[in-house]
Length: 106
Image (cartoon, rainbow, N blue to C red; front, top):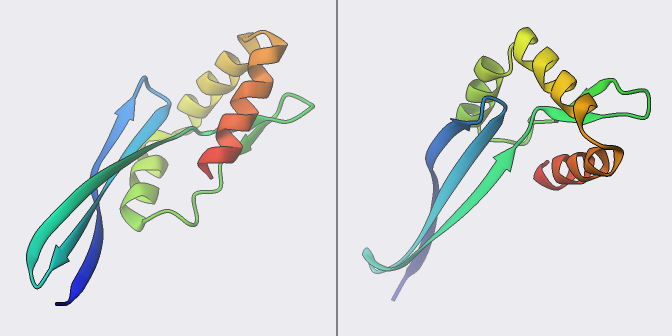
């Protein structure tokens, strides 16, 4: 009775212009027969603002190459500029939340 666990990226979506949603599917099989499947989703944002309100890019170096490719294609210079403007328009307490979310997604 051999158990195997396989995790694959099931989908990568650009959501609301800035966010990249990554869905991973993990399958556990026993002797080649699927026993269970779970799904995990995470959302990557381009980065967060530092104390000088400059955008600190999210480190995506640990992500799957296909995720990195989508992030690099979606997060163009103009998109990052618009995202920075969006973050600067938020009330200060929301900026802290954005930074926290960005840190959790890396």
